[in-house]
Image (cartoon, rainbow, N blue to C red; front, side):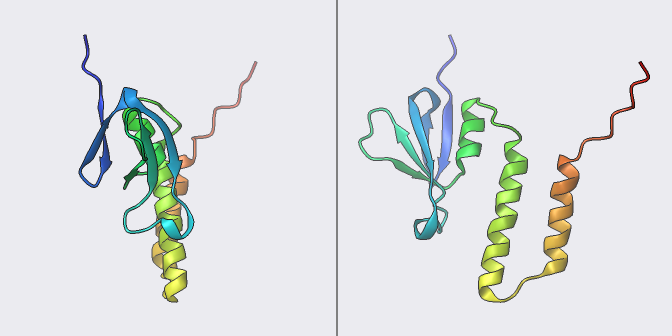
Length: 116
């Protein structure tokens, strides 16, 4: 029999994958300082705060919600752009390179045209 999978939540916290029953992304002013997701765990009255995104946690739980690394990269790029814009120091060259890498990771080679 397999032991229950442990999922790293960040901040030195772990939870059993089979005991996690809800994930909620933290948004707005509450997000920051590594705070990314609220995680509800069976038997724990208040949600735990995770430093990892809900997609990454789902992936570690064994649920595939698409390419989480790609989505996390896109979210990281968006966060960096927003922070840089607020500080008035946007490096378009760096952001352009990052965006091109993300786009290249999402593009699929053209399928050969079917003859029949």
